[in-house]
Image (cartoon, rainbow, N blue to C red):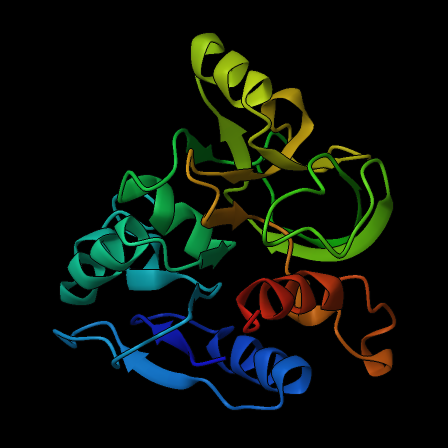
Length: 223
């Protein structure tokens, strides 16, 4: 699997993401700078990591969504390339309109850094096939603006189309309908606030994030 991790000014989980991908796939991802105008050729998977791109000025992810490389990422997503956005990466995906909704300030108005219990809502996507529907998993969170918001019509559409990938079993940030992760209509773009790359090896205390990367690897394996 040929993958890439994109770094924006203020990203701080890009190395975590790269290490996690390499641990699962056995191959180090390419490292892409936000100002690049092209992605590596023949990419199978793109990851947008967590952090505080551009210091979270304006809105979290708003400036990063206009970085030069995002034109190529939007085009790649349109061709069906799987794109994962975690935490700040999720914020970037919503600001780039690759995913609906927005990430607002946590309901408690504080930064949250802890393990979170999630329920796997959709186990049929290329990101979640390694889980079972209804399975409860533990994935760390670390964010200040993770409160997912969308209007009722959008939320109903996400629910009806099976595009809610994960829900919080213990809603840590006030997200509407306990949503922790959503898919695009085609199912090849996933945004989630919890950090699966921080739960891929025993040293992390949990390995529940590993199945997400294994799911992608299996989905992309030659028939």
